[in-house]
Length: 322
Ligand SMILES: NC(=O)c1ccc[n+]([C@@H]2O[C@H](COP(=O)([O-])OP(=O)(O)OC[C@H]3O[C@@H](n4cnc5c(N)ncnc54)[C@H](OP(=O)(O)O)[C@@H]3O)[C@@H](O)[C@H]2O)c1
Image (tube, rainbow, N blue to C red; front, side, top):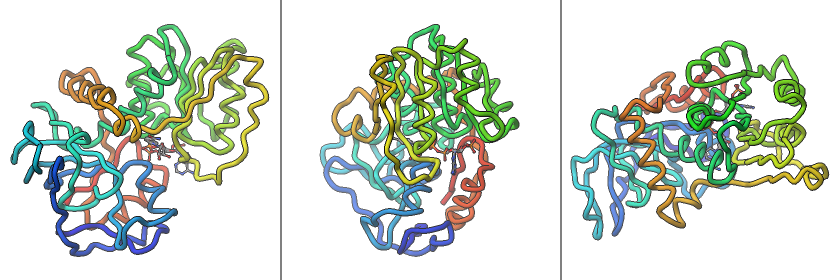
């Protein structure tokens, strides 16, 4: 099969478009012919640095397509079914193998390209807001990187749960596009101090739940605009800062909570998160949730697609099509 691979981590130009052996389908697994790859925020970070588990390496968490073969023990999917899949790597390719617990059938009426964008962003947003953030109707949620994949999912989920939704982004144009997804107040952090803005918008209380995908100094500042009894959920390092020591000295007196979150662990350890994500796909089919696709590139142009995302111009998801 063809795949976008790299031999060392680095900038988007590390990608090579090459022939590699087809993956094989083991017991409990599903082999998929990929039709749409959703480039996740973690894919660009994994390409940028860190250890390579295989060389050449095929990066990528999430893609959707058509089942080609099912392994022993998989009796509820068959060749020809459309599925969206998640795995630790391997999405940037013509074929992908995933464990059955990391596959979701695509509901009728949902385009494969849209389904490709659902599990990781919507699962992460939902768990951060509700399972770990304990967001209640009437509370205020601050969603960082509102124009990101997770951000766009979180804005919709928080709004429909009856919360007041604040979000940050790097330009007023990006924030303006979030209004019809449920954003109540946008904060352009390139021009405004978001800590001050959140305090002003909440009459000094702060946000009840903060969903922080940016990390680094952003996470520190999130703690400075967290309400009494507030919950801050950290799950990403999109800001690309080296992890720094956090000052948590203000948290105890304010009965606040800081939670780390990893969707992969929830999917590995039980069935709850799988069912939650199946619900998001059904909601997409029913028109209750929306996926925003910015641009599509051929798989052969994975480097150009990653460079476009890192130029900060992407709004929502960028896809690769084999
Ligand atoms: N723990 C988990 O289970 C989990 C699950 C999903 C995602 N994540 C993590 O969450 C983060 C976001 O994922 P995503 O898929 O939502 O990402 P994405 O769609 O690629 O968006 C990333 C956003 O980060 C913002 N950003 C801030 N500083 C940036 C910088 N220096 N360079 C590039 N972008 C920057 C950009 O928005 P502005 O330009 O508007 O600031 C951009 O929209 C990633 O770190 C990812 O690894 C973790």
